[in-house]
Length: 408
Image 1 (cartoon, rainbow, N blue to C red):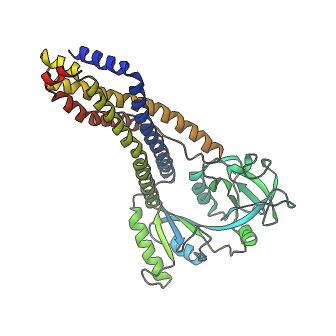
Image 2: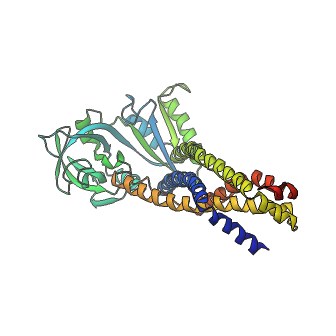
Image 3: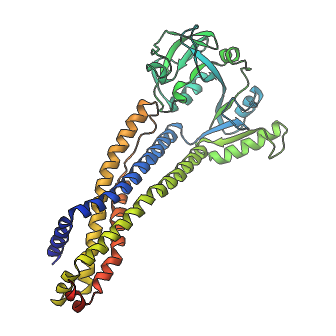
């Protein structure tokens, strides 16, 4: 009986192939949009989680308060702040970073590109911690990192090695660049992070940053802090913020700094991604709702066209539940086929979008395709189909056999 039911349903779908195809396409577009958008959202979450694993859970970040990126708020953390933080119980190490925007040129006679320049401490007792912090974001691809005693040396982000990303010609080890018209030698390149801003940064010593950026080398836009293993980072951050506030003689709520855990910043980023995913899902859902209306319309039309056929089936003993099952199954199969095609097309679009994003310097926009996303989209497509076909199926099952047989 089940086999006959499926054969009958498939035969009717093929008889009305044009209408069935258009209905399948409508659900395909909606599922394609949902699948593609969520795959990019999942890709971003995967990237964030991988960074979190590399950075560990015991990293704290101290920053001046104020709107804007580090180094652009007009307030800074001082060398005294850094020394105080290092001396606190539960703190393993800490280092300060100097931030600023500068014009970077490959030729002193040409117009350059403005980018972020980061000053790093190259003191012998800090250089190892600085390298560890940087390696969690990106490994060194070629050359070497800054070391104690370096002057007018620079390590650059990945994009400087790619033609037409920053400069017309790619840079190599030993090449000279000009940061705010001061000459530097390129000694290394970092691997691609996947964000054009990060991959366009230049890393120099704090002392060089003082000269290039016009900032004091102890005016830090950010301080990275490592807490002891086994301690709760949130508790350490709260305790450290309270002590630093007293050290700076500032009132609670009026402090000019903030200390957060790296983990909490990632959680906030994940929340933003989830909100964006939700908004994009709702936008894509509109096309799915349109598809649901199309399926319902198709099934209502099918019921009208097959009224006499339904009357014959009921006359020879077909139950209402059997009639209902025929039309629910037809609409469910339409939804499922649309879902399969939508997933396949969404996968291709996501892959293409990822390739385009990578070529534009946004390698972090790499789609991910977890099993739950595939299964969820298939189930959702089938559910939309069956629900859309329920009321037409109910109408078909309630037709009177006598009235149905009279239908011409």
